[in-house]
Image (cartoon, rainbow, N blue to C red; front, side, top):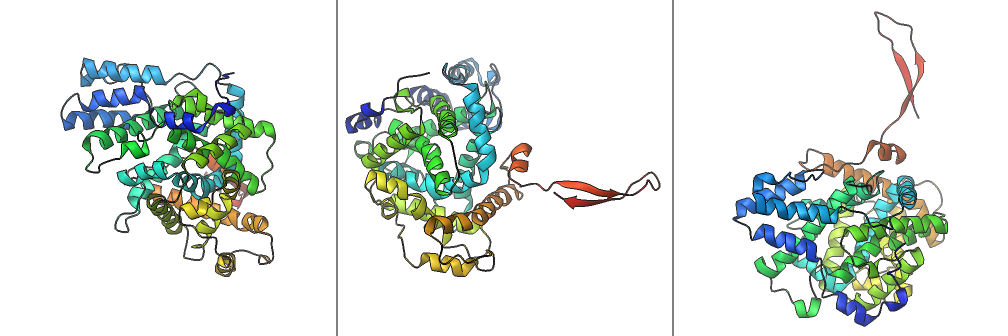
Length: 424
């Protein structure tokens, strides 16, 4: 097991230093690609990279020996799992994802992303690149970016995703190149004058570690708030998956915690160091809320995203001593619960108005997370060029496909049988 991580060694000075460090391997590769030729060549390289579901040595030979060698070197260097990766722990993390996938997808939207947006400097990079905003009421650019994140999580945590050359490993290799491309764009091509002195390097090591924590301890904290009972081993096995992901993403091992408690503390330290009110964070959060409202049916659930965001950020607001909801423009209005109750009366059975907050959340989250996931699948797979793919085994685990069983089958008639089926 890697012993590089020590939470007591993470100080503000250490985090400041990590803001000046990015991902040299991916940055060097992208620089060579972009500076190798004309725009058409660059586009051809990028299309080959992102359209292929797997990478093999020599697959880029048509691009010339120099570029082919560069890409082969990147792929070989970044595809190997760390020596300390534990296959049994990875399988256990995959199992947790198969059990609570719909809840995790909901938490990505109402907890992970908003928590990242509270970090003003990192949010500014997302804002300046326009990757997570709604433009002229067009939800598609934002939806595509969020789909990329959702697809990465599926690829990483599906069975075999983190095996040698697994789909998750290939996805992470691509994500590193996307990040490096954004950094290159901001430094060399952007019309926006990016303030490196104030914000540090774009998508730097601290920001990457903070984002990684939003997928690990932030999700576990959210599941606990949904009253999901997780053993310490289950929590740490899930964290191990994201520790491996962090390694494959090029994050320094000094920023890769082993356990949930270490991850929670690292997330807290990063929030204490970076969280503050910002217009970028507010704009990104507003776009995220718009996206969720767009995907869920009607307008009866419109108050739910903001209510959930405020609720699921509470643990980290308490640990960091900062009002994270206020940082991103989410106000905890006392009558929001009443408006939600009024809006979903026709969907939810039972008296909800007098329930304690955590029980109220549990009651409505099952309906909300299901509708959100169904909305994501419908939006991305309804005639779009890019499909959001969930393996059949996970679709079955999450109840996204109907299973039918023959209740009665007629005798053969003209060599055909008529079956009466019931839904399982």
